[in-house]
Image 1 (cartoon, helix red, strand yellow):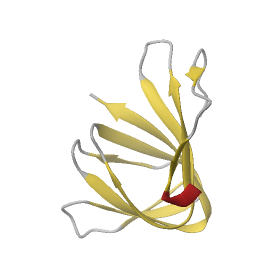
Image 2 (image 1 turned 90 degrees about the vertical axis):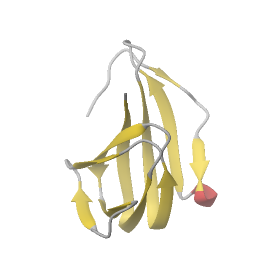
Image 3 (image 1 turned 60 degrees about the horizontal axis):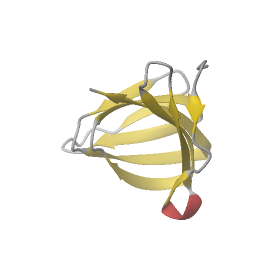
Length: 104
């Protein structure tokens, strides 16, 4: 996955003591995305806006808030999370890289 004509923020978003790190990019059409990496562990992340999470490397297992269903994802797959919600994610490989797109 490549993006052209972007503005990248040099300062990282760091969560869970550095186990999740992402950078925000703004595309030419003014939409934003975050590009990140998660290290091995289990995390809960909240959403303000709806999100599409594209897995670009590694594997993870996800449970969307309000469900009991655990679904595995790997590179080339994605999942959506509603606004004002969240998800539990378990990274069982060394790292899981992702692109988060915000959905209006």
